[in-house]
Length: 530
Image 1: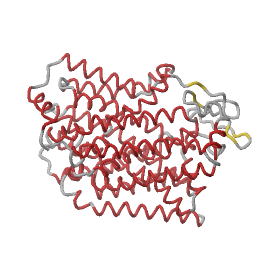
Image 2: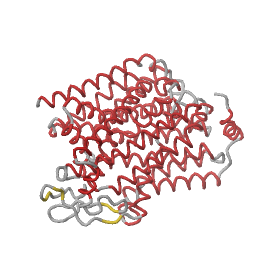
Image 3: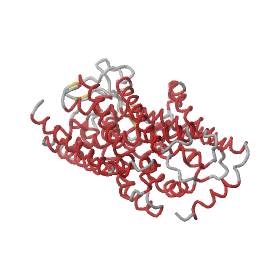
Image 4: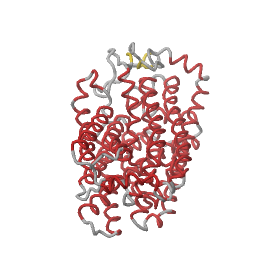
């Protein structure tokens, strides 16, 4: 290992020690009871709520997955995805945050999303809670795996340890497990706050230095215009191999390099359906537990407006910086990364190439921050789904706080193990793995969250039908329908979201209206003194 790599490692190690220190600092308070461990006692300030929501949401996908898409195929898919996410972020904070903060407290002081749904619909048999908890366990475990892929890629490429990818995945998983076990939700939210700041400055710094190294924005645009459809918002660039065949993960081929530059075909148009498919990412926000829990944990509904401004500003700047980094990276490193998986390391290559080692280590800690802030959230939410929602809510209703927290810790171990398995046996594309989990959670929970908050006629059968329809539709569309191509090739979240909404409305109207006490609670949410 070179002296430069040692300096990078020391800088990253310093950041990891800082994260552990935060976990230890908040460990005592977080372990007082289940509400503190899972929701931080509803005491998050506006800055912590906003920054931790965005940091836990964006994950390593923001610094690796999204720049990788922009590097490999240009502006089309990456820009429209970023626009959809930016709009979704604003709408979620503007429409959902305040009412969910109030409703979750009025509805039995709910501390998890399955708990809220169960209390909202008086689900005494815990059917809805069970389905929600299982959905969270499945899709968040996949999500955790995507974050562990990030650890493997980061350390493998930086330190020349590609052959030790498996070891890097395991070590990264163990680190996140330890500090999540120690600190719970409050420690996780506080570290996410700092990690959000680090991610933001890492993105801005790499983009600014990259543009300067490329000779300015004009020079970057001039270089990229030589690639067919690369800067076209209604087109997509097509990398090709030495035989002129399009490069895809399924084909397992690599982009040819001619004269030091990656080879591209003539490119293709990007249809309106493709644009809508990318923007449909924004629909996922309405069902993302890691974001919705921050809404529930804000210290007061009155603080939501301030949090919204902070969160949306951070999100918009970070998203478009990530896309720009991928495109600038193509201008600077035109023939270096020849597969979709390898292209997701463009941020790493730029940081290592353009910064002194210690500074590069701090910048690359932004990737660690992104992956840690997401994986700890996903692991904690998954553990709460099993411990609080399934064990205490369904199996052992008289379980003590101590017992619930021990079950949560054991669940963290199991989720970590499954996430490692996903990382070692699944796709090496962070973007594609995340898109699957995002669709599953967004379609299962998103429509139901909106109808739960804003349509009083929604009843328990409608809620169950909507959640099942959304989750199943994602899997069926992804694995069967989407493979038909053409109009069916749309991102699975979009049709699944629509089908879930239809199921909620249809089944609710065809079955008995909700009980009077549920309607009365719905009506008094906005006026309840909290």
